[in-house]
Amino acid sequence: MIRLLALLPLAFLAACSPYVYDGEIGKFSAGVDLVTDAYKGGVDDIRTTRMALRTNDQVQNKARLGLSQSCRAIEGREECQILDLRSDKPKEQDDAEHALNEVEPVFSALHRYAEALAAITKADDDKALTQAGQELADSVSGLAGAARGGGAPTVAAGAGLLADLTEVYLDSRRLATLKKTVLATDHHIEVLSKIVGITLRTIQDDRLRQLDIQLSAAIAPLRDEKKLASLSPDDYRADLMATQALVDEVNRIKASDPIAAGNVLAASHHALAEAVRSDKGQSMAVFQAATGFLQAAGKVKAAIHPDTANGQKDPS
Image 1 (cartoon, rainbow, N blue to C red):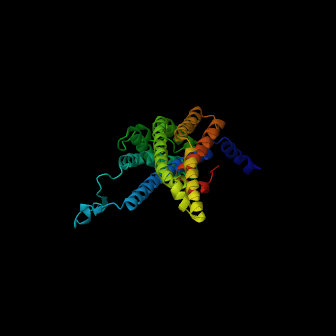
Image 2 (tube, helix red, strand yellow; image 1 turned 90 degrees about the vertical axis):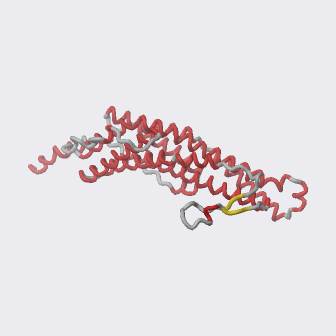
Image 3 (cartoon, one colour; image 1 turned 60 degrees about the vertical axis):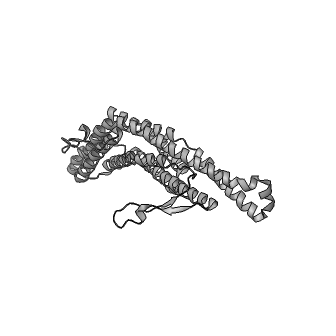
């Protein structure tokens, strides 16, 4: 009986342990994973399609080709390339692709921050929490640097992130760490979310422009009466199926709204910030915002780069 009474205070503390939003942060992190995958996969798809369009044009027109000077250089590490020597060769969107690549630090910083937030909620002892807190502090620096468009300068929010927390209950430490960091980074997330939305919209537009070229080429033999007359039923079926596949891809890509997904990303993080600011425990607003972001991110991922979208697991 005495042992039971001695355990009652501990049971009371456990019952009063603060809510640390592990499920909601898990959804936020999974959503960031999806938009990051959409960005990386979308850029890769643009590059692959651009090269395929270039090769097809060179084959169709029997383009005169050569090699770049770097192919003959014994020293140096410049990339060897096949050059199109035609004066009237089609203009490619290299500048747009280069601009998309330059945004990569934004997605990397968001991804690292989201992972660090999730690690805080999963830390099961003081040592793990301290390590997760250091990673979170480092990720905040990268987040602020990406928001400013520069390197990764240190910000005040990261300094002393775990100070004076060593003697409080583990969940209280988690919540205190989240509160300091989430409130300090909310503005950065708002800035980066706009960049995420605009970048994914640019990828969406570029893919649609590429598909327009492919779709025009695919429908050509089905639209030209002379070419139609020479097509066998099997060739006609193959051309029709190829055209329909491109139409389906166009409609799939059009089905998402990257700008809205970026806005929901910011709203999800802001709901978390408001919840930890008020310190009132679990908030339905946080759950709904995190779920909404995860769903919006999944739609963007499925539209822009769908290869693994169906395999994503909802971390609820």
